[in-house]
Structures are given as structure tokens and as C-alpha cells.
Length: 120
Image 1 (cartoon, rainbow, N blue to C red):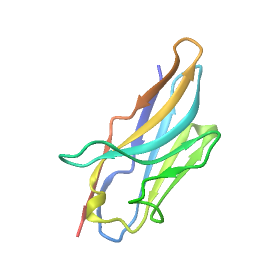
Image 2: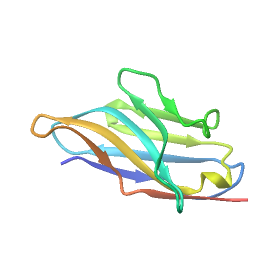
Image 3: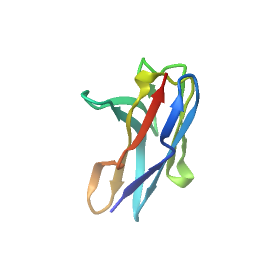
Image 4: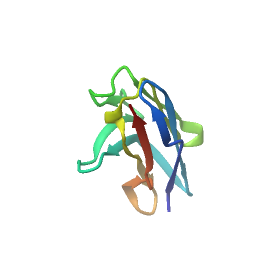
């Protein structure tokens, strides 16, 4: 079983910065993609940023130039550096990973979510 543990959410004022972290743990697995999604109240979950092992990082247009995704493959960890945050960035942020295991094949794993609140 593979689990994702997120940290770093909280409250921040508009224009400030926040850094989210997500670490994958388990046994006998490999990761080919990690990223972040978010869901604001009353809205659908949307992609924020996602990185695969073989391609470039994809960002939502709304966060390009402000958010940066980085990965530490040795630690199975992904980070989201959020700069110049806006009130519309307020949402629950979910870590996501594409995981491959020898026993269960390929599947998606989600974290429990971490709340980010941006005040104006």
C-alpha cells in the first residue's frame, strides 16, 4: 500500500508565499508522476501542477509564473512553492501520484488534502 502525506498548508495574506510538501511511503513501488490538484468551495477539482518522469511539468494557466513544482525522486517527495498568492488560490490542495507496483500494476494515489487560505 502506498500513502501520500501532505504538509505545509495554512493561512497566508495575499502576495505572500507558502510551500507545500508531499511524501510517498510504502513498499515495492515506483512513481512515474507526482503533482498537485486543488478544489475550491463549490468548484471541481483542478490540476495545479504535475510532473512526469519523462516530460515537462504542466502548470495551470492561473498559476504559471507564481507556483513552482519540484521533485526529490530519491525521497519520493514533491513540493509546491506558492508565491504571490491570491485569494482565488484558496482551496484544499491534494497531492497526487501515479504509482506502479509489481503486485497491483499502475494506479493513482491521493493525499488527504491540505487547506490553503489566502486573505486579502
